[in-house]
Amino acid sequence: MKTDPGYYDYWPYHDRPKITWPNGAKVAFWVAPNIEFYELDPPANPHRKAWPGPYPSIAGYGIRDYGNRVGHMRQMKLLEKYGIRGSISLSTALCDHHPEIIELCKERDWEFFSHGIYNTRYTYGMSAEQEREMIRDSIETIYKHTGQKCAGYLAPALSHSDDTIDLFAEVGTELFGDDAGFYTCDLFHDDQPTPIHTRSGKKFVSIPYSLEMNDTIAYVVNKVEPRQYGKMIKANFDRLLEEGAESGTIMCIPTHNYQVSCPHRMKAFEEALEYITGHSDVWVTTGREIASHFIENQYDTAVADIAAKQGGMKK
Amino acid sequence: MSLDKSYLEYPQRSYGMDHELYDWSMLTDRPAISWPDGKKLALWVNLNIDFFPLNQRSNPTGVPGGMKMPYPDLRHFSLRDYGNRIGIYRLFKALDKFGVKPTIAINGVMVERAPYLMDMIKERGDEVLGHGWQMDMIHHGEVAIDEERQWVANSLNTLRERFEQPVTGWLSPGRLQSANTPTLLKEHGVEYMCDWVNDDMPYAFNTAAGAITAMPLSNELDDFFILNNNLHSEDSYAEQIMDASDFLLSEASEQGGRLLALNIHPWMLGQPHRIGQLERVLAHITSLDGVWSASASDILTVWSQQTQQQP
Image (cartoon, rainbow over all chains, first blue to last red; front, top):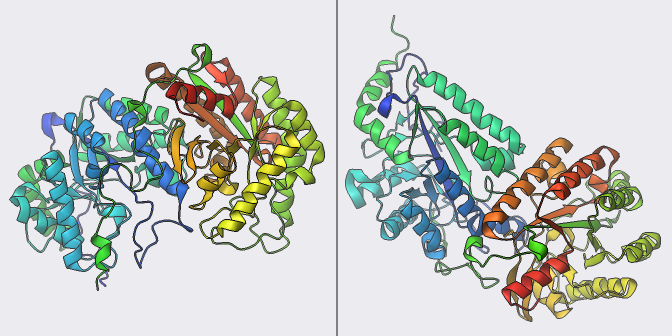
């Protein structure tokens, strides 16, 4: 085990080279709906239990199934109303289980990125070869069902190994060259894109996917009241917009169709989306588009600036 | 280091669910339901009459809402009992004021513990649901089937005899089920169960003894969940229910009938500082155009007729 994962170097949020977004936007705004499949009776993982208590765990399983049966359509309609294309963090087995949902998202030109195969199959305990196979399966499944070359990764149930990010970058390259496997949502250290060190040395970037704005973290872990969640989203946006005048920022709302799409939470979420998309200096986009834009336009400058700052402030 | 190879095998990875309990379907793909008199939103309020024994046993799941302190946990015991002595009468008054007729899920043991309350419920004529024998007899996955069968039979027989009504609905203690529960319920004449909350409308559920209906009794809007699990304020409870009613009503206007199911515990909302928020909620919902206040059976009957399934 390491004391530091070593994916990135210290890069102060001070005097960074200016990041610019298309059309002079100050904030790149993206919504990442997690569309997940949890198994009712998954095989046991020695490091993490999938469900509390004995089989069947109907409350936990039920609300997640609710997300696909009821919540997805609600969230999709809402995002469509405000001109937002979702960047889907996908349990790729859902392509087999619920192809209707995949078709609806394809029709709307949403992005699909890998969130593993099932959200009840954890990375913990896998050999590097097993993890590579799981990641490869997920990327191939996305390609087979959507024609998209998967650009991003969020490990299933945020379960990682020391190899996760390297494996994703490598498998992406093996399958599709530079068109796949170039951004991660697994790191929460910044409000701007960060170049990430990988074994392969390819241009690979971390795109902020805010845990603080994540509806499950807000509603389940922090037990935030729905209207307060709406206020938090607006406050997060206001500050990132203000700072984005100096250098472009990123705002992400990671959602789950079994959280924001519940009837008592839709109003607060809608008000927040209406507020954000009511601004003209916002780039409403997807994870892949942000990562590509950064890699094409600012990656090298960022790498140089990070290197220059390793010794401290210039006198 | 590696995992057994079965961890990377996916035998259920195919169309539909990963089990045979019910079919996969998205709510918006189903035919629209119309409630009586052109109403859009069915309001179903369910009250819980619970008994949490002081000598709670250890079991694999714990008892949601049960004793938490070393024996004797007088604080939780008596505060739950408060609901059956004080809170329930407050709730009846509030519901009656707004003409909302509840269903009542009753632990079988309460029939002997509170005869006065049982008389009152019988006189009111509210629909009664089986709710297990008591809250420490959790129908979890490790209960022997014969024992669970006995619990189901005792609960239902006791309520049927006492209230002289068929008792066709069921809510498990703590909403927990074993793999056998749905079949045992069906074998004992239960037509609908409320534990599975994976939809906003009723749906058909398979058991070894034939189909039963799942009537989703929202857990997210349950007073215990909002106030005790999430520790939200009373004001927020009211806002959440009102936001949910407004949303469901507007969705129903476009997509067909919807169900607002409120599960209420007399020991939670029956407190003096909370009852006013329930009244605020009821005033709001009953003022909306298109709301149909109904019992679970009435809702099920209409739904069954329209979906042409036997309840």
